[in-house]
Length: 328
Image 1: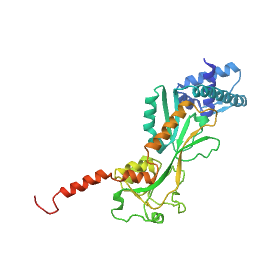
Image 2: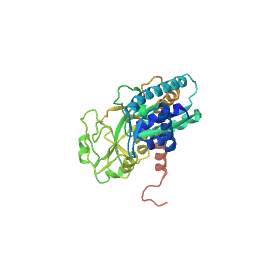
Image 3: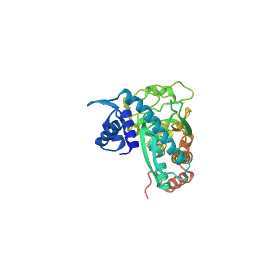
Image 4: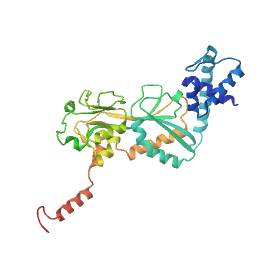
């Protein structure tokens, strides 16, 4: 039985608080986790864990041993990262965390990345929270907000605007808001996992707006579908709103009120060298955001406007059609 596997298993049991959780995380049967920990205790001649049916807790000896094991595993990780950084071709497992909207945004990049580097497999986990890089073992996190932890390595990939949108049918029986203050009289759909809480702090010339509405959700997809169905107004990042607006499912409002720009960032754990596989992937994401994605209100408006050729075609078709009320 491999001593490194025993140590890794022991550390995951302590960090995750149980044998079953460690087994799920490591992708092995619970009996394997049990045998690894038992073998480690037998080899050391000491009890490392106190366990019952509900809880696992380190003994005094186990806690001291755990702290040393964490440092050993960090050293192994740093050694692996050093070797990876010296290799020209990315390979191995790339572990990515994203905020939920960004996960949907960068999926095309993952397809291109794995096609270009077939020796890399990707595990992407999207969350509505910041992650613990050490405990959750991510190589990079790509999010649409700066992290609270100042000890991380941060690279700004792009900046984006928020836009206020609604379905055209929402305005069938009501006028469009003309100022941010008018939002107080509108039914707004609230995204509960937003870093801003229940406030919309996006207008440059106004204090944060507190919207009101009869629907709150932590699902970006439900948020978008509710807006498209005419249930209310919604605030979306430009990169999320671009396609629905271009396709006529949503219309942008309050265009004349500039919004605060927010960063899209790549975040790496502060633990030595960043592996080549992560650097190359982030470079591809940055290029995709620069070349493909509408991140600003101006870009969004430009993409939503009909092309001159399309307008000319429509005008010609209208001129060629019989006048209303005539009989051919």
